[in-house]
Amino acid sequence: MELSTTLAEIVSLSVDERLRLVEAIWDSIAAETGQPEMTEAQREELERRLAAHTASPEDVISWEEVKAQALARARR
Image (tube, rainbow, N blue to C red):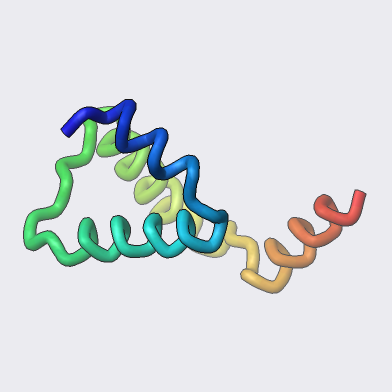
């Protein structure tokens, strides 16, 4: 498969067709039985976040607050 040719064909599709293609690609990836390995940096970040939550489980922000803050930023 020549990637540049394939990309040229993809770009020629309508936005709706490209979105359907992305969805089909994502579904095919999700259907794979194996899971991608985390990088060492991802593993370290996960461990850091878990440790922070264990140390201060009450230090959280509700989904409603996160959503309200994101919507407020989007309106600016």
